[in-house]
Image 1 (cartoon, rainbow, N blue to C red):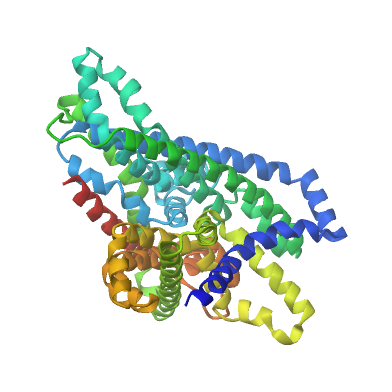
Image 2 (tube, rainbow, N blue to C red; image 1 turned 30 degrees about the vertical axis):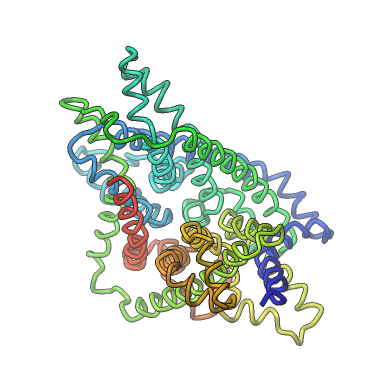
Length: 536
């Protein structure tokens, strides 16, 4: 087993690192065509791509902080009727893919939508009565209310550790409530706010559905335009390095914030719950807290679901129910296969680190952990570049067929992106297993395979199921890689929802979109149960 361990780990690392390595190596394949394309884009549209991406990141960053931080402060520092319910209700937007929220708001707020039609009829107005939602500000709005739970979750965890006790001590020293919030609560949550914002910004950089549907010209749109419209994968890969550089910067910020957050958590251990109680809100302050807590849930989940139910009910008789079952089966099949493979990879990596925590295993684990931060557009370009090279060198190998005409390419891209999700869950499960179990099993003559099958897996079954569920849901919602790499007649719910919405068939797009929302509720329920156990 030990003889096979290192080659297997190196193979896993190579498969997961290949897309990024191929994208970076594109600069060594410089040719006249790609040079001309990049030169023309740099002189015309590339500055707009950069500015649009930066503006979108700024709007989304400010939005998730403005929505997520007040919500976290309210449910941890204060006490008011309904606070326990809001703790988990504000997680519901995690179940809504951002592109589904974009479809919902477009259908309701566009010029021919019910809102503007009603306003024009009620007040006798003509022309547009609401700004165009398909715009840069509309995308920022969607991302703010779709991604704020990242900031809310991390800030809530950071504040719950010590904020009530320290704010009580500050009150006894004569500090007013605004000063306690400004100088006690917010500094405690600052690393968590930075980490949550960085995670949200990585989702923005990886997005394709919202920016494509809204016509926002970001780096992702430029990559697909250079690749699909101009038919030059080298230029697309070289553009992808710019997007990858932005991701690296955001990831560096997130890792620094996580280190500071762990340091703060260690330095301020949880005190007993009897030391201090949350501040009770009454009257107008209680009403304001309700408004600030209800607004994110309404904007990020309730209203988008209601907006999608309206066209669904209107077009109920013409919905393609027979094809919907095929789309759902394709999504479930791909999600299930990827979940099993990702859990297997995570078990291999986590067990290898536990058995031999050397530089090789730790390096492979770190490489795998970066996968979730890589946008789908970069992964797709990075996969097809080496396939194109192999196809040109050895046509008889049929590498292009296996990657683009079967599900192998999709599974590969999914594993690159989502293995880190499974790895985090499996590693957290391993952290609760004492090494004395392994030592006792080895003294009784158990080998590595038997140790895994009879000792580790029974104790890791719950963590493995949670990992499989998270990967399954992420694959169901994945759009950029699926749009490009899916074989013929393998449309998924995410792809069909995007295509129908792009064709302005929002009534038909509502069915697969709401199915994705229903599936997305599963990890939200799991997460809310976990938070409830921790707080009780």
